[in-house]
Length: 600
Image (cartoon, one colour):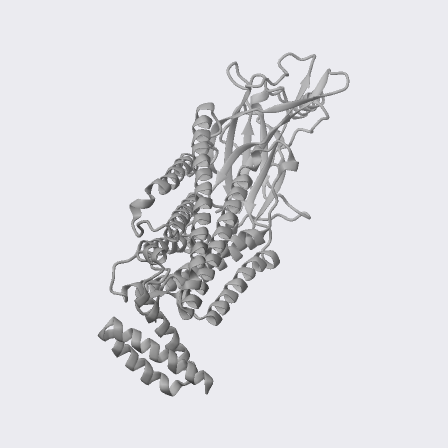
């Protein structure tokens, strides 16, 4: 019966194949480290304060650059200076002193540099903004203290303009009234009469695509009897905008465009190899095919559409769903892969044997899917929405993440146990190798080393995948950190390297675990999930030993004497087909011929 390519490929070819994979992996790291810029860029913006003299004209845009801009209120070192400047501006304009609801914080981005205006690009893919509230405390003013359960209500309005629009013309994208919790620490002065509040940044909005040239954000903080009480003396509002670097997007899409057809071609070749065996698919083969399909969906460079014809805000959700599908397929494959390599003599090649292990993967995936849809799905039509804005939604989101985290921790422990058990089971078989014939001992000792190395490679990929997922989650939720020193830095080389590692690993699985065209006479390969445990536990029969010895000896005959190899191989094949006893005799004659040829 034929084994898999991993156990039948010659050592020289296998080493060359490993070197090629290593070079591809190193190339992916170098591509991100030497060519691609940092994955993300950001802009820090301090809001300019304009006055709505028409009293709550929500249809008017307020901006400080371009024709029709407003005159900002000069900042002061404290609350009293700001009020003084506001009164002076009202006097200059001949207007009444405005109330808090008429103050509009405006943010126009991208910011100019060197007196030059710039435009956003669709290559930025996504845009996320966080807001930070800056308030003051004065002991002499009642209500200037921020209580632990205080919330701030923001009336936010997001607009845009394209290069084709006339100067000063803005179009509304969305407006919303949002509530954010204030988590602040008071830093009092030496006398204790004044102080500054250091508040944690809060998520403001998230756009799944960057389809326009410029954006404008207007924020109002109206004070009523029911809102914006106990928020301190509001001094400033700052916004930090994050977007993906355009250069990194080009490198990322280039990798996807190059890897997608390669993996699709390998999947077609793998299906052709399996169908040529004229037998049912094994569980390991079906799992490998499912993993390849999941990675192909992730590799498919549909993001090119977001740069041209389909600039919709759904791409962030689509990206999350594709990553989630790949993670689920990868985690499920590792369960099956390590389980099928566990030589405990039990049954194999049945999906239901792993339902308990896969249940944790399904639960974690379902929780993360619900969490993602509850936030990303709503953000398609309301970018200002976040599940962390209200206590009830926060508890729901936190419960989903806790359940997913517990499931992932249990999975990591289970995968470690399965890998250790598989390695121990394979290595224990080495104790029985000295009792086997030399040809069979050489064959299976090499196969054991190959499978142990590949299991170790699997463990390394699992560790890097977990590290990559944690880094991405921490980076996405960086706004939760209250101190800038806790910010997380990583390079493009890590992102492109891990992405390349996934493709290299899956391609190696598809190639090395495809059925081999070389025949192992009378013995199932270690890669045959249905036959491995029984054969490994029984260390194969004596008759099978002689047939493998015959196969290995015939290979040596072809090397030593190519002219005699065809005749010896033809006669031996006829003898093996006639009966087991004739195969034993043919093997003995062949071994004798090899010894004589070696002496000559």
